[in-house]
Amino acid sequence: MPETFILSVFFMKTASYNHILKYTGLLGGVQALYIVMAVLRNKLTALLVGAVGMGLADLYSRAVELLSNASNLGLYMSGARTLAGLCGEGRWRAVRHGVCLLRTWVAYAAALGALLTVAVSPLMSRFATGDYGATAAFALLAPAVALSVLTGGEMAVLKGCGRLRRLAQASAGGAVCTLLVAVPLYWWLGLRGVIPVITAVAAATFLIYLRAATRECPYRIAPLHRRFVSRGVPLLRLGLAYVVAGVMASGAEMAVRSGLMNSGGGLKTVGLYAAGLTLTVSYVRILFMSMDADYFPRLSGLVHERRRMNLTVNRQTDVLVAFAAPFLILFALALPLLVRLLYTAEFMAVVPMALCAVGFMFFKALYTPIAYLPLAAGHGTVFVVMELIYNVLFALSVIAGARWGGLAGAGAGLALSGAINLAMLWAVYARRYGFRLRVATLRRSAGLLLCLTAGLAAAAQTDLSVRLAGGIAACLPACLPAWHLLRRQTAAGNAWRNLLHRRKH
Image (cartoon, rainbow, N blue to C red; front, side):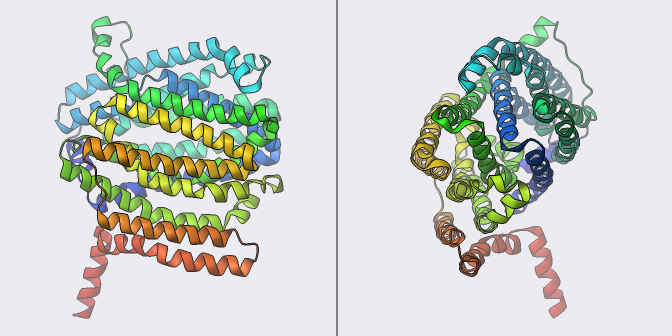
């Protein structure tokens, strides 16, 4: 393996703004492409199968997510962390063995996922729809679950070996392939194409990531060598907390959808909620794509050095909130237009929900860098307990909000759960890990929150001129921190200043 892995992992441990912005831009750019592809796919899907079809697709997709999270044994996170450490030490033979060991355990996990899907399909049908009529449909998701687990293993290889550009290329290819696979099948099969689409997309995505990862590490597994397989037990210990958290998060999402179904909303309400959540959460994830691949490995090496840990967390927070606030304001102002472009007139009911839920993404930008601290420190129990509390609050807040105020109430409940989670994480981790937000970071975040609040108030106005004037007035000051970071704290900004300086002289 090339020695550039050492440099890759070394740079992952630095905490400069230039480094953070570089990988946020790289992986965020891929996410932007994914968003464009998802926009086209959702628009065409809405036209081909309507809100009911989108609700059905979302229900089955969440089931695949839940079951893959339950069966992946946390190998993605623990495997990437272990490989990153070996690469950083330059132990290439150990890296090759580690990759083989990870893939072997991932193959076991994929088989477990398929069997688990078939075994619990009656329970999934009963929980999601209230009867056992969809048992066969849930059982048919088994191949998609297995393929999703295998895909996660190849992503862990790319992340752990520091191949972030190759990871980005595979992600871009997967985004394009998803569109090319899904739309023809929906056009041909209509509502009957929901499960074939999910399975075909999972297969195509796995093949793309497999090709990217095997360029560095040929695919080898050793499932019949007991002594070799037994070396993977530490991977399971490291990943247990992550898998439990993933199951709880997916379970909370399923509980919300079940609550909406059982409260009389039906598949249409689930489809509208899914569209609103996709608008608010999924499309804004462009800013968070570098967290697992870049930020977590860096933080893992610094968590026992309090000063550097705090510097890393604060800088990551600075970048996230600086770009999240203006992005969210522009997003809120464009919501009615976005819904018409991305979906159909049937989905205009999600606009109030999305407006109410925008605050959640700002709070997420504040608490996500903090939330990685127990995982980086290897404190799985702390992570699981905090995730459990949050997911219970999330499900209760969204379901209660939906019953109180419909879809808009669900959006408000989502924002409330984010604010509570921020307060909990800050209080607990400040005491346990000595985490502190710098005064400058606090002031910047408070100012941006005020700008976002003003922008949301403007976006809620019905008069177009008032909405635009108020939105622009809120957005301009919100752009200043991001401009400052780009101009003052990055290599590109320094090069631009040096160029201007030379021209003056």
